[in-house]
Length: 156
Image (cartoon, rainbow, N blue to C red; front, side):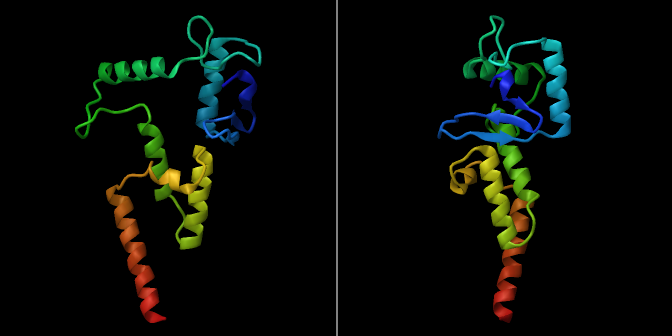
């Protein structure tokens, strides 16, 4: 991502792995944090990477992952299961929370799922399902929705 990809409407994510480009809106607190970072970082040209190493080159995935792993250990975050926290876990958590916040009703939930898949940059909703995990709240909500659906079918 370059400085030219930062717009007043959000971040322009260009040419992802499926050659898709999309605009990702930012929450006000995220936009404010990004602006503080940019102010501290100093002026740059539109072609410069937003997140750069000490030589001004774009950060590599491996370097970011390695730093994340070190920070997880340093701050003492312990795994809640057999595996350690991973760099992409916040993305998975976001997807689950977004689904939990989905409007009720089959059609509205479907529309919400399509919007979530687009926001995450997936080719279709099926790719988004891999990001979801069963949480107690989500399973309960599915069970309640299923029971309501079956009750409606019996009355018809």
